Image 1 (cartoon, helix red, strand yellow):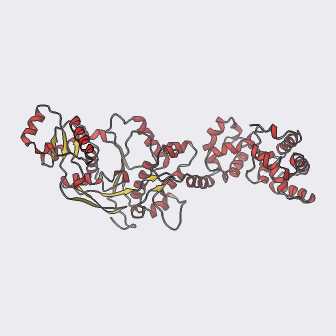
Image 2 (cartoon, rainbow, N blue to C red):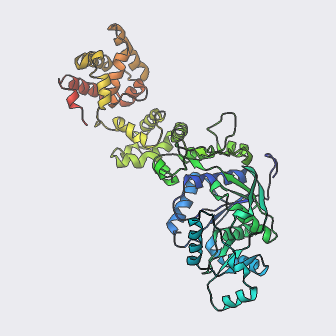
Image 3 (cartoon, helix red, strand yellow):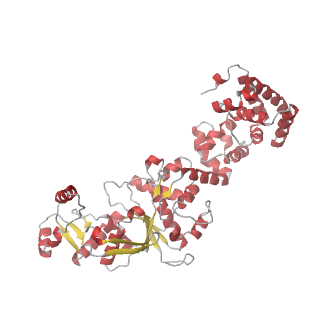
Length: 502
């Protein structure tokens, strides 16, 4: 392979998912590394749908895979091609190997093979096909086949070792003695995975195969098939598996594993793309948040870690928050509109051109720094769009009723005084409201925090929010005064704790 900086116009790779389920994050990471590699070397990425498992393949899965790739921004240059449409070519390759003497018909039935396997297991021995049918005379084999005897076609695995220089793991070798004679065509004429894969890769002139470590046991079998037809095998690169925090293979028990699930949970495609790129690969220098152009420029298969990559959802959340913070508020508005409509919070004057559009975008801008995923906006925006919101019990306990703050009556007295100070502020800006609050606190020889924290609960119902003076300016004087009145009434009721709405 050329050096990292040299273009390879002849590079052709394929992403070949099986349409038997959703696009798993492991598959998405494989697609992404194939994409980065082709873009780095100005090559061609082919999308091939390996749908020869007719019983399990579905059109819905195909749609979900294409949708997930498109949403992530992983495009392809050729395809999608469907493996099931090349069955004739797969069969022809098997027959070519049969005619050359590198394959043979096997008439052993499944029941007989299973019996032999169980017998070996009972004796504590490993078992592989014993080549019973290899000893059948070729003429006898043809006669049985012509008579309709069911048979598979097996590839005869030659003696010796199968070695290759893996672009991730380095020199890798399998002894042929551990490889069973490979079934190429089943008795119904359908091709097996290894035959179909090699046949299609030959047809598509694939130069590099980049796939997960779970395929590494297939590689020696495929290399043997390439050599049997005098073809140069592609270069292979096997990616480390993605592991959960418990260092076991990532699965449903670790949470969402589908790309579309992460989309529904409010992650941005740019953030998930960036996160997946870092699962097993690092550009060095401690860089984490990168543009696609930066990833392409720095990507190299040789830099991929050989160990399993840990899927750290906290890191994904952090990256997502960074990308959210970079978004234009108008794009956020479009992304969260559905959530707001479902919550009954969206009205048309928030639309583009609406009377409150600019104000709405300022609210979004204020909330961005606290939002890890998109649904956080709908959670935090309610007090800005509606006066119908609850006081969070933990916020009440910490800032409205705590004995150290003077209890409900002490806090009520401060909020009443603060209401009076804010009522005369004009214009009702961040700077002016801050000046009024701090002047009041100083005049009473109290810390500003004694006013800021309960004010936050009064305005938005929570113990955390954007800067309190930003919140005041966005809510406006009349609504802010009304909320202080509400808080004072709540505190002076005598049973504030019992009146927290659950």
